[in-house]
Length: 161
Image 1: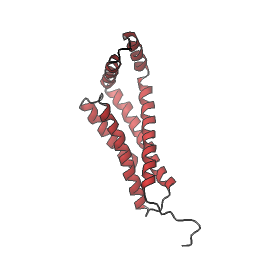
Image 2: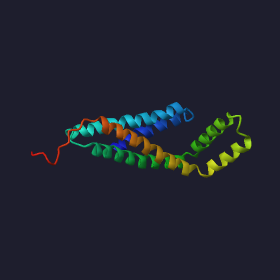
Image 3: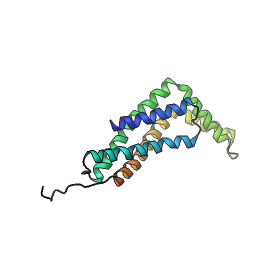
Image 4: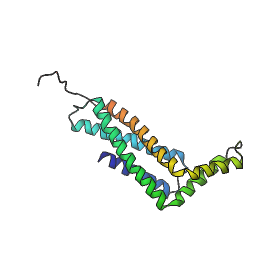
């Protein structure tokens, strides 16, 4: 459930960026990772409190990372379906990439055309790989932070109850 909520928030934010034509705004793109890390920290702390702070660092990290993995699956499905239903999004991303490359005076038009051809050919592969790696890396970071700052009073198997 936690991963579903996390994915829902990230999808909603992505749709807002697409609808407002803010795909080229890198600052706004990074905010999605701030949302992700913040939500993971919140959910991990809530999980720890719901279990009377008896969970270990590893259990808390595992909870957060599993949520990230589930969110990754949902985000992948969304990205693939969205790009198949709205191919103009891919065209817009390609256009933004071309503009960014054209800003560099060292890059020739021939190099831009070659890069665009390659990117268009492997767009879906790049989309899938980028989604998996970025979501899992930032999920691991959020899980580490969340597990580290959550209060822990794990019971020892050697303590008598």
